[in-house]
Image (cartoon, rainbow, N blue to C red; front, side, top):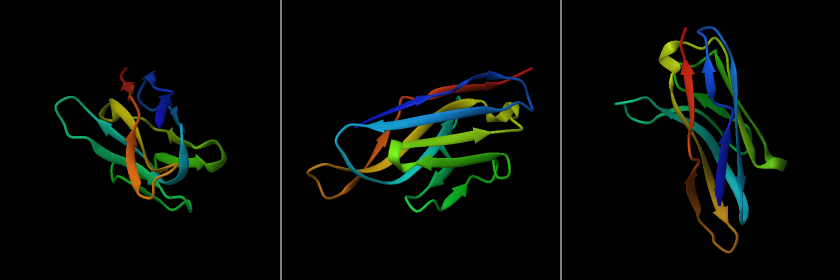
Length: 120
């Protein structure tokens, strides 16, 4: 299973970005998909999470500004980021809880990370 993230970049404060992450490989089922972020010298924190039934939850610092969504037919999760602040600067990682074909348990997989920089 591979997770390919895209959409990062540099933006001014108040701007917007959209991240995408597609899971591919021998996938039987995907349960939750999520975005995490890690700033230099800090731990990796949950940004947003969405279940297979589209229930969402967000980190406190992004509530009201970020929106997570998913397309189950495409095995893709999105993160719409608006009103970006310098403190949103980090490497963003996608995560998926996946059952691989031929197995019976859910396992976590991670994308390679995409840099988001918010600066004037």
